[in-house]
Image 1 (tube, rainbow, N blue to C red):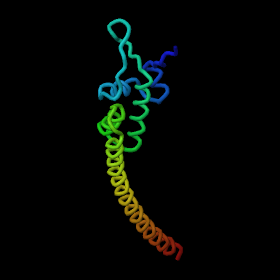
Image 2: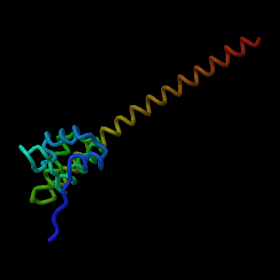
Image 3: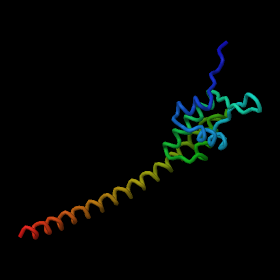
Image 4: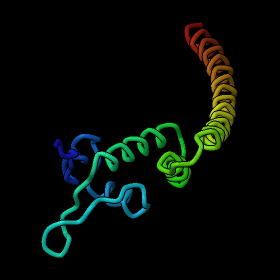
Length: 135
C-alpha cells in the first residue's frame, strides 16, 4: 500500500520559491493546514492536499485575487457540494478582476498616449532650439 507523499516547509519553500515565513503566513490565513509532529509539535508536515492548495493560492494571487477570495474559492473545491455554484462564484470573481484589469489597462493606455504627445512636443521644441543654435 503506497503512502501519500509529505513535504517539509523547506521542500515547499524550495519548490515554489517562497520563504518559510510566507508559507507560515498562508497557514495562518487557513489556506494550508499541516500536521504537527516531533517534540511539542514543532515540525510541520504538509500533505499533497496542502501542496495543491498552496499551488492554487499562488495561481490565484497571479490572477490578482486577494487571499480571502482565493481561500473562499479553494475551500469551495474542498467541499463535497455541487460544483455549479462553485464555478459560478469563480466566474463572478474572475469577471470582476477582468473588469478591474481592463479599467487599469485603459488608464495605462490613456497615460501612454499622453506621454507620446508630450514626447512629440518636446522633440519638436528641441529641434527648434537646435536649429536656432546652429543659425
